[in-house]
Image 1 (tube, rainbow, N blue to C red):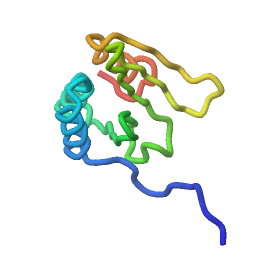
Image 2: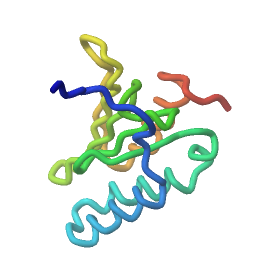
Image 3: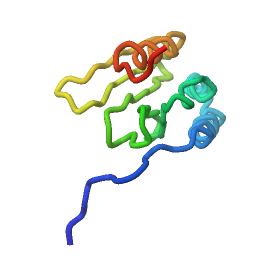
Image 4: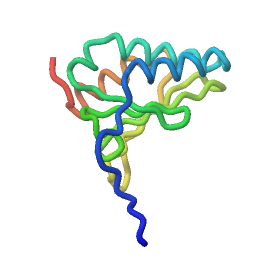
Length: 124
């Protein structure tokens, strides 16, 4: 018997499921409220309607322009409540992936810049 490490099919979660997960986690762990707020804002933006998909990986948010989130290049968004910062990591399989760390207050703008200018997943 062989085990396959290939993931097939959609790995995206419904945005409502992602929001509920992080809002519930923030209710139990208030230090994570900035992560929940960011996810709520993303879910209410025009991005999901334009094709932005999401899923959760432990306490991180994974974003991609396809429902094949973990199988394709994706943006990993992590929150550090002790430092009140967000870390963004573009997991594209490269030797040295793009990354950035920003204060909580700048997370929305940093993700916006990544989606529209760095990865160019979307256009205005």
